[in-house]
Each structure stands twice: as structure tokens, then as C-alpha cells.
Image (cartoon, rainbow, N blue to C red; front, top):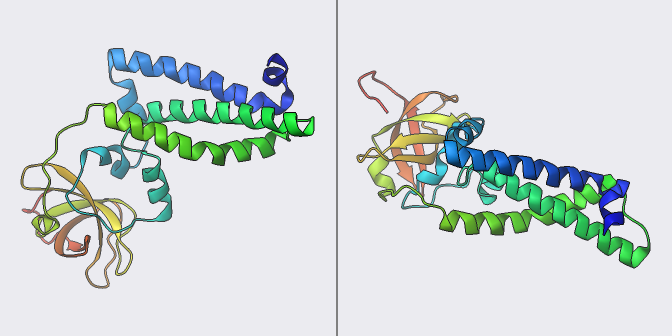
Length: 221
């Protein structure tokens, strides 16, 4: 076991577990004192930081591949620091397991960088399973489900991407109860609506909205 831990080919996994322990301590301090985890989560795009609290009662249109991958790993649904701790723990243990198994069958270790890449992909599914379990047991804010049509006519803000015809972006919008939702919307017409734009949702079809630039300063999010 010690030979596995000190082998140069497994060094990166030892570093991952050491960083995991450090972040675990920081996460514990954050839970006791508050504030630190919120600051870390603020590094995410706004569309992810609060997506866990926007459980809309309909399926939104599929966003971009990168956004879908992050959502699949529960980014935005769990505190980012906690999710990082989970990933580093699973990654480090997966790396050691892969190297131990490879040495058992071949008599030598994989190249460190090759093993690191294999462990990265091997860790993704266990990380998702672990994150899903944590998400189920952690307390969450109660939300009020709404129909997608209820959001038509409301003003939102583009928080991720640029909305254009045929190219939806993520929009944050509040319903009549003040609850925030994140939906996909494309521009209605030839205009483009960059990130940060105030928009008015004018129609919806199969979970994807059409939006125009907010036509009036009296209409607010």
C-alpha cells in the first residue's frame, strides 16, 4: 500500500486527496460560520449559482453541451466547494484503484498523465451518483411550480449566452410569486440579445421561449 502511495505515477492522486482534505476543512468552517461557500459559488455564471432553487414545472429546451455536462454533474445544485471535495475524493481513489489494478496485472504502473486522464473519466459517474445522493438529503428552498405559459409576458435577464434566432440563451425570470426560474429563450426576430440584456418573453413553444428587448423601463424583472 505504501509503495502505491509514494510511487511517482500516483503522485497526482495524492495531491488530489490532500487538496480534498484542505477543502473539506474549509467547507466545514463555511458551514459553521457561513459566507465562504457563497463566495465560491459566486464564481459560477449566474445561471448556475441559483439553478437548484428554480424547479420549474416543465422541461426546458436542451441548452449547450457544456451547460448540460455541468448540470449533469449537479453544478449549481450543490455548493461548489462541496462538489469539488466530492470530485477530488472520487478522483483520487479512482486513480489509486486504477494504478493498483494495472500493476497487479502488468507488473508496472501506467504513466501518471495517462492514468490521470483515465481516472478523470472513470470518476464522472460516481461523482454524479454521490452528488445526486447529497442533493436528495440536503435541505432545499421550497418552490412554487408554474406552467410555462405563466412566464409569457414577464421580464427577465439573459444570464448565460447570447440569444439570437435559432440560438437560445439562458434567461432568469421571476414568476408571479417572485420565484426565480431559468429558461431557454431565443430572440424573436433578427436582433441579438447579449448576456445582461433585459428581455420580455413574448411566446413559448415546447419549453423554449421567444424574447424581445425590454421595450419599457416600467417593466422590471
